[in-house]
Amino acid sequence: MDKGTMTRTRSSIPWVGGKYRGELKGEQPHGQGVLILPNGTLYEGEWKEGKPHGRGRISFPDGAVYEGELYRGKRHGFGKYYKPDDSVVTGLWEKGNMIKLLGEEEEKSPYISRQGKRDIININNLTFKYKSGKGIFDLTFSVGSGEVFGFLGPNGAGKTTTIRNLLGFVKPERGECSVAGLDCWKDAPRIQKQLGYLPGEMAFFEEMTGTQFLNLLAAMRSGRKKMRRSALLERFELDPSTRIRRMSKGTKQKLGIVAAFMHDPAVYILDEPTSGLDPLMQNMFVELIRDERERGKTILMSSHNLKKPTAPATGPGLSGKAGWWPFRMYIP
Image (tube, rainbow, N blue to C red; front, side, top):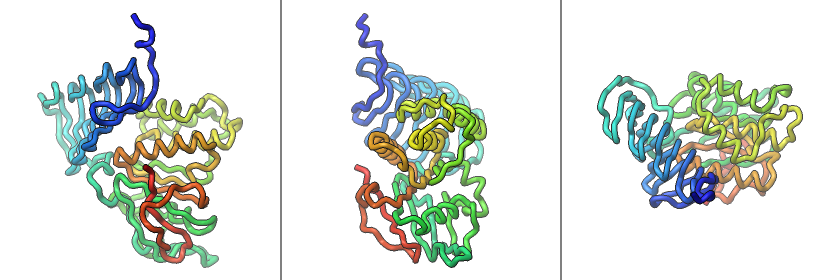
């Protein structure tokens, strides 16, 4: 047997008209990977001999999502089918067809940002003022599904204050902000369940190892997505076995990125996400953002560095009196 055909590598290749990223056996997808087709359908999970096979997920262009067992690319075994109308069907499947309905109930899909091109983050006339008189004033913008939205400005311009309002950490003086139709102040716990958040200044349990820290966060979210965490650790070349207090700033930043992305949320809010990363890891991060955008995720990023953000796809516009500029990120 040709020894080379048994070697698993991780790569990005064209496949059945789409783009596959993941493990290969020879020249075929085999192992953990993701395939994005031109029509927007996305397959992710386990692959065998070029086909999705085992535990995985299919995201359809209309916003529906199947999560469960797959057999050679088709739904086969136990699975859940999340409909765009916010109901979920649980059943047994055989070669793509449901053979036994186990239950159907109203349940909002955890994959909200895949339900067509619609606004997910909405800020309307938002005002929050500190005692010093500084803050954000009459701020308005929105971020749609499958969109990367950046806002740029110097330190103290109000970027983090905006993010704190979106996370429900503070209550606005007037105006409103929402995520997926949920009020950021009243529904903060529900919003935080479907968010990936990377703070500008991260606080860790310094005596923990990176693995212990990630395990703690995973346990708080029911311990799911272990395969995704492994893929992220591999992508960023991160060994989490070291104690956090011994990690460099760049390594801690990579740990924070893995923590924000590992539970596969629908919405990301990232405050200075490339701070401390070397140029190679910055490129890896941009590649990750590109992949998440193609999967229909909603991404809001901030930066104070005029040199780092990519060129805006639309002209910048000053919003309110905050002194920073929001723009659609251009990531080819």
